[in-house]
Image (cartoon, rainbow, N blue to C red; front, side):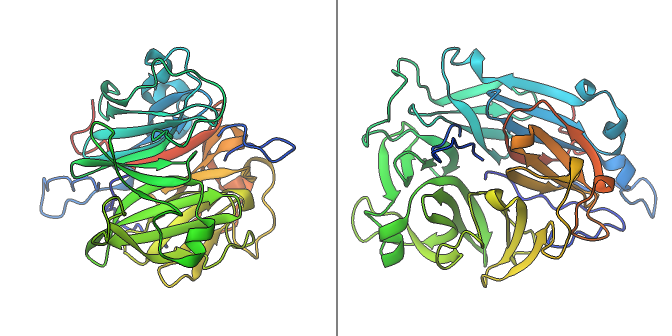
Length: 380
């Protein structure tokens, strides 16, 4: 969701394959590749220790977006010293319960979707270098908070991304993906009212992430939905609408084919693999990260199916996003443990306390992660 694909050129680096809280009644309570350095001599190559990288993270319950400076040197540093900037959403809407959710990076602009189960939603953009506010795409000022939004609401912006002269938003409350103008006028929707597939017409609900990705050389729309008895990652290809208001997208892929909580449950933030073979996704309720091919086969999972259950600092509780670093380590937004954690997965796909390289705690309900370089002129 969301993010410019990053391909890091690093000597000796081989990367294989690159939640929301509920109460006792099961009701929700919350919910780019760096340029290679110019050769200074005839055999100059980038070195892992000199590369470095930054991480954008949304922290829902703290209503913040942070940019953190990571890499080998940051692991031993004072935690506060790695914070490049923090954007506190309360500077926009001080009395708003909206929580930061999806981050989409387009060039150097961060599109931020905000969401709460009992309000409309909002969206804004930030400058990735400074963290400065650029635009309020939709401001909830004047909204009366409390109670379920009506179906006329088009602004439950769990996630938002630009597409040509439009914006695409996951309107989670109203169980649809929306295409709107830059003035937020409705153009089309993906919903049970517009889908042709019989299963989708009956079941589609709860979209929580939208991504634009390249698939077979063509831009496609990847959608994650984690609704009631409908937990899927879907891919839509460009299409010509049959009627005005129909989505300009046609379903070409769905994982799993039919809902099965053992296969995927309460999924968040799918990310396309850079080799084009598939995607990985946070399978939050099953406390794992899944790698799935475009043929619908699970090719990898972390922690692995044959691994002992992780314990201590290695145990995950509702992971909601993952990202690989230039070193091949794995960052996870471990939301119910209120942290970001970095694992060494170079030896196997099991997770133990010995694999924990770094963690940043006291981050209530971490959500989206976006990895970006700081060795290519983005540095301050």
